[in-house]
Length: 187
Figure 1 (tube, rainbow, N blue to C red):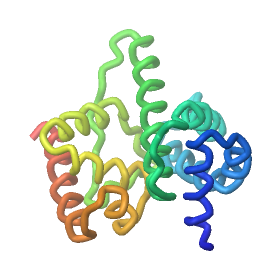
Figure 2: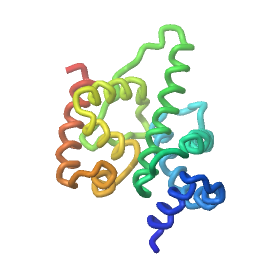
Figure 3: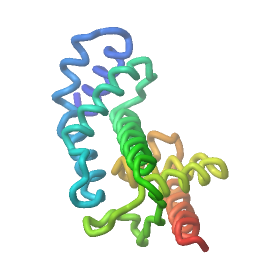
Figure 4: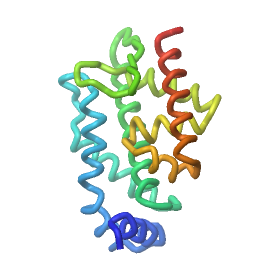
């Protein structure tokens, strides 16, 4: 059996109430969750008070609460994990922005590949709001961005999670990137 199949079986067992499956699952997903968290945190400003370990721990807590999710496979699990981490960071950014006097948002510059650079100080709240607007227009395109950009999923994994072809994912990815760049640049 492949690691993906093992992971899927453990996810299903956990969802069905097998607490020991969670104990087996955590070591299998820990490195990947740290990689996701590190990817998120590398795009944050220097001196950010939330650390990679804290983000992973908060994600674990929320994942445990989501044990009723109908897990499909490994890619689905990591897509949900990425979504949770995005929510955690956006909530954190919102709470810190509201705590600051006049904490106005600045648009996040997105290059052609939508890659976070460590010298950028992206405003996740602005990006989250833009993704929410995109979701109201086209939910799947928003999901493609979330899975690829935030979740780090490959085109094929994204296609599997969404139940569409890889060509559809690439088409949605190109259109969503263009839409987000235009939206976030104010154009």
